[in-house]
Image 1 (cartoon, one colour):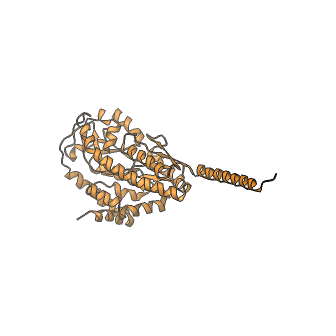
Image 2: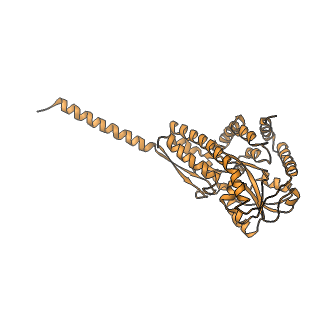
Length: 337
């Protein structure tokens, strides 16, 4: 006998099954994989940022985002990474600020020697209106989004020739520098002989004596085990560095609005975590380098270095155009009186 009720139940069941399948299909389609690269060792400060971002992005997106972290230059080196972000051939990458300057020259304002009075000044700049304005300009000019500036550290100096007790000890020293004109000009002002080299070539150049010294963030010196080949260590603090996490427009456009919120929130929180974590580690790393690591350090006079850095600052502030000059002034004005 024909049963209208049974037929209705069957139809309702089928409709429910189709609805569940549709929701499931939509959920699967919404899942996005993000490849995040960086060129440093996984034990570096970049590894701290990347691992925390992976954890938080997946958590905040309720699992709809899967972050694949690729350390140690697996995706590419820093010299190529920013262009790849612009082209959309890489999703996200952590890139040292000085390696962004060739693609967005305003970044050099942050690279200038001794541009920040101290860490408080640096964070007031980067986490405040100046940093927000910089990020807006970067995105407008390049299409690349800066998700977080992250931890601000100092580039410590090391060499194989002699202790650094004053600026005269830099005379003629063959120093590896990134391919960044501010950094080249700074070491020239210090009296050294800067040799621009990509990061990938640096360890070999140090081992073979092609260069006699270099500078890196404190954690990088330990992570790369440069203490095994470089006997002299100097807390010069001439350049500040930070580890901005960048995203391509292609990957951001691939995310729905809720996923974009999750990614930006994860990046901000991961940057704050990295800041706290690395700030607590630096003193211990420096102690390791100059004790168990075997590097020798000595008291030195920083006054001449600071004066030389100020000369580089002033020269760039007057020669790089009105926009650059105004931006440098905004950084200086942010410092407390």
